[in-house]
Length: 136
Image (cartoon, rainbow, N blue to C red; front, side, top):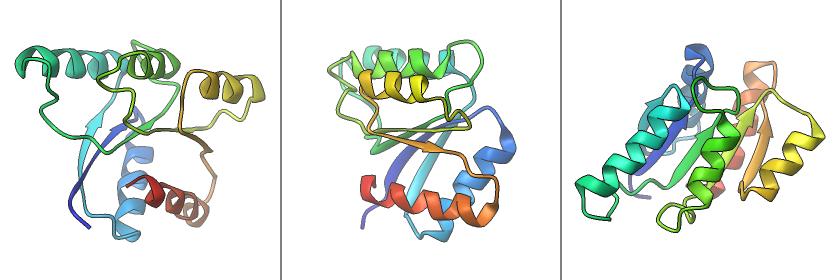
């Protein structure tokens, strides 16, 4: 398996660390790009297009997105990504504490590829991250 570029959008440093550790436990070879707010994500993709004349600088194979992030809400980031043909094929997995059925339904309506509710224990968290292997 080659090196994968995974974009993690998570404002909680402890959760980000758990995600990265969980991916290490699962032996997914990756380069992790960590962003902490929605505006940073939108700026990154828009600047990449301008800088590289319409071509993405890095091939991102997976985006792990928290919904409750500063500046631009995660659902709006999802819409931005899935409504743009240049990025719409990148798998996006929401990893959120929200278990609200309306939120989950809205995420799938907006094109999310998977929705994982953040578990409370570390072992359960790592177990949930195994699902991500199918996207890497």
